[in-house]
Image 1 (tube, helix red, strand yellow):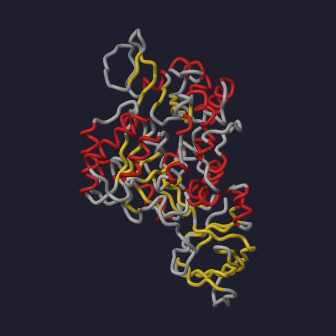
Image 2 (cartoon, protein in one colour):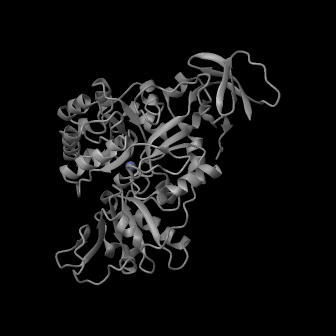
Image 3 (cartoon, rainbow, N blue to C red):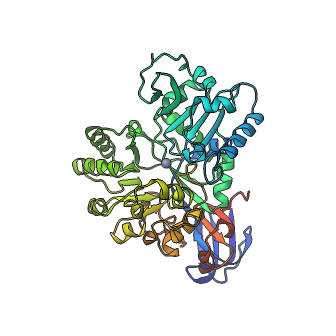
Amino acid sequence: MSLLLRDVVVEGRLVDVRMSGGKIAAIDRPIDPQLGDDIVDGGRGALLPGLHDHHIHLVALAAAERSPFVGPPAVNDDDQFTTALRQADTTLGQGEWLRAIGYHESVSGPLDRWRLDALVAARPVRVQHRSGAEWVLNSRALDVVGLDGGEPHDDRPGVERDDAGRLTGRLRGLDHWLRDRLPPPPAPDLAPVGRRLSRYGVTGVTDATPVMSTDDLAPLAAAVATGDLPQRITVTGGPRLSAVAPPAPLARGPVKLIVADYAPPTLAELVRWIGVAHEAGRPVAIHCVTRPGLALALAAWDEAGVLAGDRIEHGSLVPPDLRSRVATHGLVVVTQPGFVLERGDRYLSEVHPGDLPHLYPCRSLIEAGIPVGGSTDAPFGHPDPWRAIATAIERRTVDGAPLGLREAVAPERALALFLTAPDAPGGMLRRVTVGAPADLCLLDAPLSRVLEEPSSSHVALTLHEGVIGPRN
Ligand SMILES: [Zn+2]
């Protein structure tokens, strides 16, 4: 399988690029085609390394393609929320679960079982909060998972009750517990996810789900094998899988550790988890979204020591005092600029004004010498990395309000967030060179023009190991 891409611009130079055996075989101009070469006209567009999304959740993204999204910016008020749920209700078979995601209080206030019952009572319904940490179940769903009964017999932490001792339907931090009580989900169809990411020029992702069993990774491995996912996939996995190799051809990334604001681990626990990962030769990726969360993680690193590649996921709030400690430790930050766009308006009304300038920082980290990688955190953020790139430059919310303008970065720097290797977010840029994997993203215009208004609509072609990716 070989392909000759004619008239493309690589690092400012007009060239032809020949690919063979999944790698870039030649870069020159002109290159004479060899027997059997497919020839594609590059239209003088910029040819980049394919984008790598450093933090995504593929199975959840596949599930999200089937579940209505019921939060801003798509759903903003009670009417829209009601419509979205009722519409989804009509598309499902009898007794099937209705699953919705992305809810936020700003849509229609705090959600509980009774609110959901009023909308859909006849089938089990569960709605995930935008944070990903909370589900709200209607009464039918509480019954199905065995929680019903108004009695406070189950004192499981995370199951909320009101002052009268009644279940509110809100379950926090109980994802795994809940999943064990749900009917087995239909096998995730990852092909639409693979197609969609390919359309965005994405040739690699790091799946940052803290899975607890290698069985959870099997669908990803299978989807890569069948070609449903043409991307290169690096996986994390939770602390229990520290010493376990993922099924081929998945690559092993850092161990994912969660410092949740609702139920943080103790310092000793976190130190132990880091130690176990490091002993297995693996860096850790610690989820930190609050100031106390980051402070706890840094305290744990003080004790456990740092391994090259250790990273902070999100770094949603990095004030100057903690920033210098992140830099001193040599830690990497994997950020989601897209949240400034998608969630910025809420942040502006909810976050303490003193913290606003330090939300989803980028430039201040880079200036402090901290490597910064980019990601979408889809399905919690929109999976299009070009939206994140545009927002890293603009720092504007959906409503157009500026948020943390001093954290804006230059267009090339914003693009670079997605051009580093899976094992070194924010490190050396991958390049289009002879011998490199032919994982490439061809744009329909010169790079400088695309970066004036970054958008995935400029992706003309994506190549996965020299093979043209699915187009829609
Ligand atoms: Zn995530």
